[in-house]
Length: 285
Image (cartoon, rainbow, N blue to C red; front, side):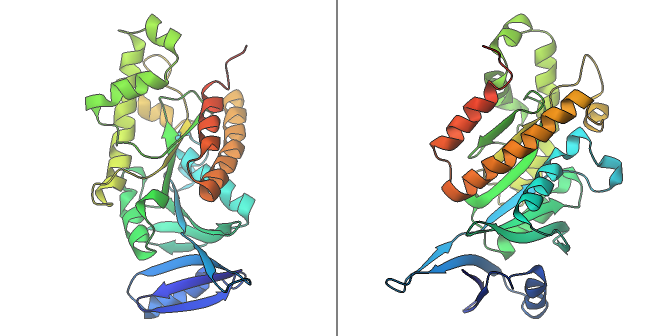
């Protein structure tokens, strides 16, 4: 297999192994224009090469040991899980982000952990998408989601940034119906309001650096809601309990497989089945 990196009007082809961040760094030092990476497989039958569009896979979180292992950083943890499973080294800083370049089978991917803190993630996503010429439909945003039970995942092709006008309907749709009926005017509505604020700034930051577009895929990782009247910020910066940690670890493994399926097959029926299985994963028959 061969990879191609295109700069303006020229293309450079080289084998899969030498495709490293160091090569891209050297090119970036001498060329200030945008860069396109793609994977090509030579077809020995007719000489036509099949090219694969790269994916920009972004996990949201906050940098520093202070936030390691907290609920708010599961987006970073998913990126770490993908990098480990695919053997991708995260060792380069570009556009205020820690990045790693590799592939899932024949499809090239860029793993990204923005280092500009959660609510300013767009400062990394926008420039990286532009530099590597990644289309909107191939930008996967991964982040924690309070509207989902702990350890439950949801993969969706697009969405809004969660502002208050309309998010309630979306959130109620994904909450357990029995819980909603029992708490319609109580605790649930309060959780929805807090969850709306939770999602608003960070996803809106990404949209703001993608010309206001929202048609990019999301992988949401459920972390549950704060108990009672617990402060949301304290909840987000809290580490998981032992039981919750086991649930998150299992979710990370499942998330890696979901990302592989998405990258290789797009939003197929298998993604629909994945979401359905996640929705009822804690329901006992």
